[in-house]
Image 1 (tube, helix red, strand yellow):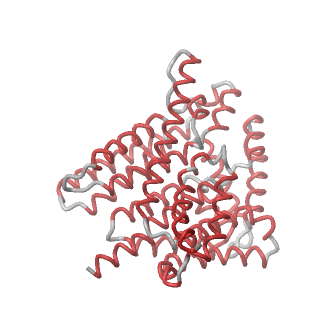
Image 2 (cartoon, helix red, strand yellow):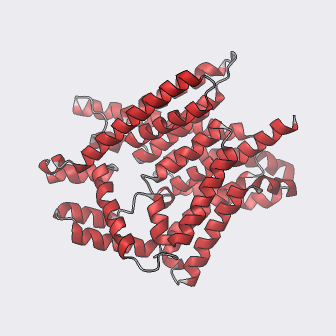
Image 3 (tube, one colour):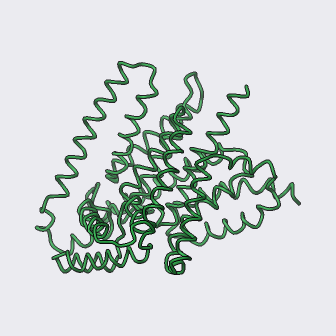
Length: 406
């Protein structure tokens, strides 16, 4: 029986990541698979497998999760905060469930396949919408956003992961898979432009800059890096200008409401971040935090008092928009201790993988997305955090050990 379960377990683990993009349609299935994996885990795990968890980043992330649990219990907010703490714990559980799996390439292939499946599904919807409308829609159109399989920011994250995995898989010598990987990069990059995922484009530009530090061709690296910095600076300036623009107020309130409801606009973030800063200035208990529920409640009060447009105010409150920045969220909710533990986890991760571009790029992408999204507030986000830690830290450490032993 143990042999059979050991053979089945990796495929169940891989299947979990294949169906993840369909979270909005089959949300119960990832949870069912997770339960099945948890039940089988004691029968397939070996004592030596736990050695894979021995690294400073994993210890620090575990400490961070334990701190959140005890913080919630001590300050009597465990019940109200567990809907967020549980999602953060999910990433840690996923890391634990991974350790009996020995073939990391299967997980990479699952990400590649799921990304292509999400793109095919979304493009099919684009075709249907175009046929019904009689004209082609692009970018920020609400119709485009409605066609997407999942939220644009998570589709963008999935495409970025797929691009990084493909880039890492390309060999310098001839390999029949090189053409596939190049084609996959082109498809995912085109899709990012199609859905106008500005955040994903910013992340890719940042990663391109990071890549130049690993380039052996110093002159070309400096040129590409400098050009990327200029483009990124121009991109950010344009976004800031767009955020401060009042042009959206001239549009009918119905269109504005529909647009904001289905996309993560920069106007939305500018309002949310301003409220978050105001809360931080006036908050008591900075060391231990307000708790996730209390932070949300204070944001709602800020929206009530500071958003002049009635329709927009009602939208922000009904949707209970969070801080849209994971670092701000942890600072307000978990306090100074919480954010320091989390930052220590990130810094130790970068230090551990600094010699490997693929792992560094994964952690960089993780950090960049958290600047624009509370990635732990969505179940799918927690799953992809688990993927990043597995591919970027645990598997990277094992590859490093293999190179040293040989």
